[in-house]
Image (cartoon, rainbow, N blue to C red; front, side):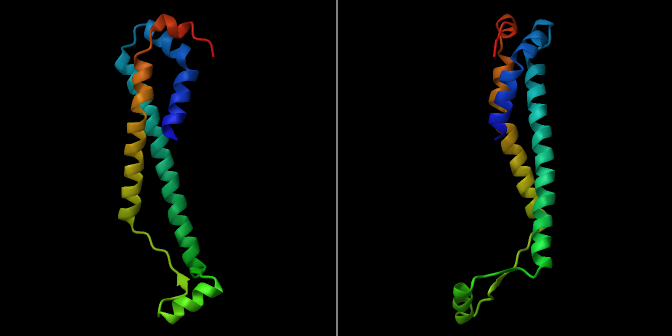
Length: 129
């Protein structure tokens, strides 16, 4: 999702990136800008996702868990397992999943950043959507 979002963002801003390059900005600065944007998008997504995930787990547990349908409940009782699914999440799991998602997002953003850094300024300024 991040790759698609940033790639389309680079395509939409091709003219602006061309102007930036033609004014003398080093290509690495353009690449750094795209990668920074990816980092900010992924960090905000990780924070929002972590809050919503932990909140969902807390809400489900406050309601007493997720009861299984009657046919499964009979089977689970027969084998000695609870008929209610309880959810639990640990801080390390939240941190690790957020960190992994952010790393994958920044890696996925490398291609659009590379593409933005390799734009030829004059061709980019003539680019028509």
